Amino acid sequence: MHRHYWTGISHEERIQAISDITRIVDRYAIVLNFQRFSDIAMSFLLEVEEWRLKEMRNDLKAILTLDTGETQFTESKADCIVFLNIAFAKGTGDLQIENPNIPE
Image 1 (tube, one colour):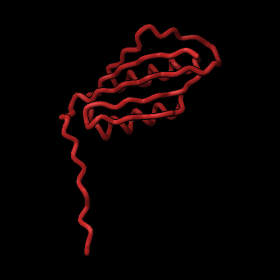
Image 2 (cartoon, one colour):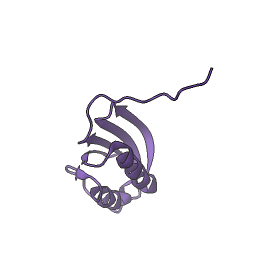
Image 3 (spheres, rainbow, N blue to C red):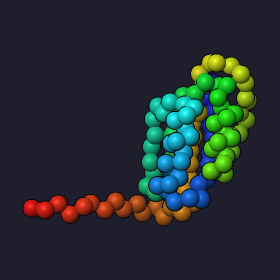
Image 4 (tube, rainbow, N blue to C red):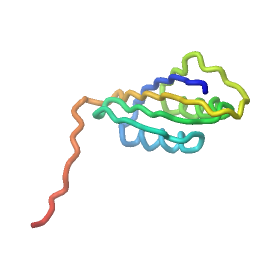
């Protein structure tokens, strides 16, 4: 199984970027795992058929500055793995999630 390492930078607000990225990824791939690193980065492990890589790359490039490295685009129906790491340019490294007030 081929493995591809992609990196991207988002200049949108993090919540909007995650929504856009997820919408695109869901069209082409299966999310096997994801990891959030505060509000500065997120990592996805994706399984996708190789023939769909080029379209997924093109759609992601519309919303991210994306580097797909040495990816070879083929028409193969074989599955491959994509490690997609996204950095959020507007991140601060101090993600705080507000908890709602709960009445007693």
